[in-house]
Amino acid sequence: MTVQELPGAAAYRPTPPPAWKPLTDPAPLLPDPEPYRVLGTDAVADADPALLLRLYAELVRGRRYNAQATALTKQGRLAVYPSSTGQEACEIAAALVLEERDWLFPSYRDTLAAVARGLDPVEALTLLRGDRHTGYDPREHRIAPLCTPLATQLPHAVGLAHAARLKGDDVVALAMVGDGGTSEGDFHEALNFAAVWRAPVVFLVQNNGFAISVPLAKQTAAPSLAHKAVGYGMPGRLVDGNDAPAVHQVLSEAVARARSGGGPTLVEAVTYRMDAHTNADDATRYRGDSEVEAWRAHDPVQLMERELTGRGLLGDGGIEEARAAAERMAAQLRERMNADPVLDPMDLFAHVYAEQTAQLREQAARLRVELDAEHDGHGTEDGGAGR
Image (cartoon, rainbow, N blue to C red):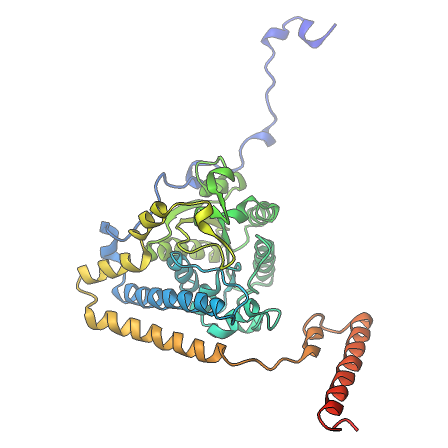
């Protein structure tokens, strides 16, 4: 006799045990149906004018930085550059909401966020130039290395934030990732652990529409990337990624929540990558000019400029001052990047381990012999200097 044949089987309705019931009410975690905006809304009246002007100046500088770095690739001074033109509002806001003690975990496209946080513009490009592994000291600047593998920086951010919490340090980690990175296993692992541990982390997803050539619709069937937060038990926020004060406000609230012990937040900033994925990409193969032009009407720099001039906070003099400062930065960047660096091949073995392994010491000794032999050989060819 099967279960279905037992008397009263038709009326049998299994009741899940209490552990099955939802741990969290999902309603407060759901993002709003539309991206949050400040510019062009009543909310802009509550914005700090000094903050708005600073955001504008940083946006102008960031746009010029992207243009100059792109030009450096064409001149052979950079091996590759993933431009964030069109995404500057996300980059600037991410840098400005953090305290000095906090940590930024950027992806390969987030050089501008690192520069806005105070990193030397040349050091931010060192990795892309191929000179050094990172180009800067992460501990000094509280900026993790620019991460080229997709989403692998997210578990690192969670680990650091959780460790800081265990130590009693008042530290928040802000981890940046693109929409393509949300399809990686590291994304799932990071968000799951962060929510369970209530780690003080803010995840900023810059949804620029494409993972290289793959559109968002071919990566996820979710209503939005912000909705993914609910499945992990954290709030999801949806914001207009080209509205700098809106991104700043949403991230500020998420950072404050994390610092106060409220746990992580997933913020999806809806934006657009105006340039190709990198200088090695042909974006015309997967998107049309009309799409790009439509987004130009929602340019983050122009949105800020129109708002500030319309409110009488910015005049022609202020616009010219911001552009002149950006040009000075670009000129210094060109001058310094045009100087060939003096590199020591032995640096390959530095900063790999706190104490070098036997294998590394052996490799370093072998390279030293080869370099000495090469130097002696060149000296002989130059007139007997090696004798």
